[in-house]
Length: 205
Ligand SMILES: NC(=O)c1ccc[n+]([C@@H]2O[C@H](COP(=O)([O-])OP(=O)(O)OC[C@H]3O[C@@H](n4cnc5c(N)ncnc54)[C@H](O)[C@@H]3O)[C@@H](O)[C@H]2O)c1
Image 1 (cartoon, rainbow, N blue to C red):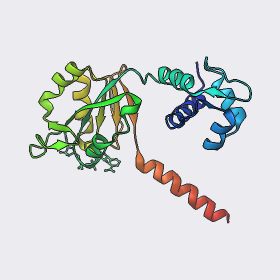
Image 2: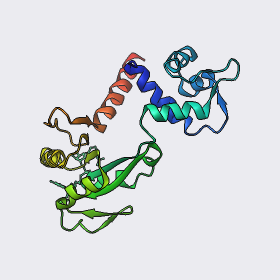
Image 3: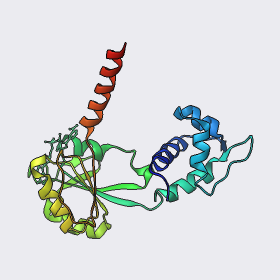
């Protein structure tokens, strides 16, 4: 079992490797680019099967392949978004998910004015189509981009349609059955952390 901090850093290495075109990369280079210690990089990578060559480093393709497998990236994961407002539309327009094997297959809304409109290359669908789409595309993840007052109702609907993973942007704790995983995304909290750290630094100087 990988320690959680190692798992988190492996995600950073994976993201970094997406942009590397050289055949080999050393632990020193990874460490320098991510501003961590080379020993830490070597320790993290020692959990993998890929081994580095002295003075040359790790074969980038091998490392990428192993990390792809670790994160299940080669397996396409179908995702639906519920809520075609500002945030839902921004996520649907983001092209960066594809390289992680994530495909947004549909976006839903309850507003009749939005249904039938295009968001990126997806037509906004009514909620009555959710079950059919989840089944047809074998959708695993639902993204909640509705106001917090509607989020639980939408979560219930996603669960009833067979969704096992929810990425929740609404600022509310959702109640879901045990076999459903929820990851809450709170952008404001991250910004508050940054604000707090800046304040602390200011107060010290
Ligand atoms: N906009 C941001 O940058 C941002 C950042 C962090 C978190 N959030 C959170 O994300 C959520 C969405 O924010 P937004 O700014 O995109 O809101 P928005 O008002 O622009 O869009 C919400 C959409 O949800 C739809 N909707 C409402 N109830 C629904 C239901 N029961 N079923 C289906 N669709 C429904 C609305 O018709 C609307 O299109 C909110 O909970 C908000 O707090 C937003």
